Amino acid sequence: MRTYAVRLVAVLGLLAVALGAAPSAAHASCAGREPAQVVADADVVLTGRVTAVDDPGGDYDPRPVAWTVAVSAVHQGDAAQTTHVRATPESPDLVSTGGSYVFALVASGSALTASGCQDVVAAGTDEAAALTDAAGPAHAPAAGGTALPGSADLDLGDGGGMSLTTMVVIGLVGLLVVTFGGLALAVGLGLLTRRRRGQTGGSDDGTQPDSAGTPFK
Image 1 (cartoon, rainbow, N blue to C red):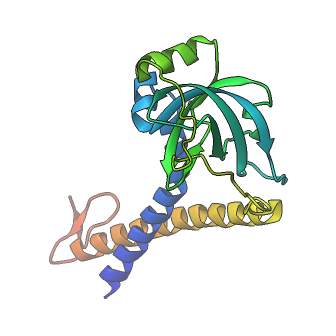
Image 2 (image 1 turned 135 degrees about the vertical axis):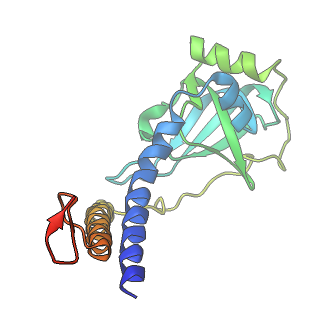
């Protein structure tokens, strides 16, 4: 029973450390994608001018925002002339009203979404050219296109996000989980090592007692 408890503590410690490291690993995997990979991960690649930015506000990032885009060319998939994009970029200021960009978007039901992870670049740049080249020849957006993803206006309401206080609390809880998970892992491994030494009757310097109780190596 004690062996099971020790192993359980060690496993829980490993799980807590892994969960704490997962967001960092996911963020790291976002960076450094080749244009061909960005395009392969997208359902729609288009060039267009941002005509409106709906930012419900909030003192936390990332938070959901909505971009209205006047589409000038579609390089992959299909999109309406006026397309609405839901985004949760690290910076809500990733785009500005009146600016032209190349978007590599993912269809989520009836919406088109962007994360800001190399999928939104300013038009006319080398990065934009690389994306459009990877996506292939352009065609015109659909004039009607009411059934296409992104054709419907987005209602973000109050953003559906969390307050700064909530974000801080979640961050502190995550820190505590990682900290105590590491401690649990260390304690579990220590108990397991001590138990193994007790079973073999050995000491830290590798000596073993003979039948008379005299230590020898």
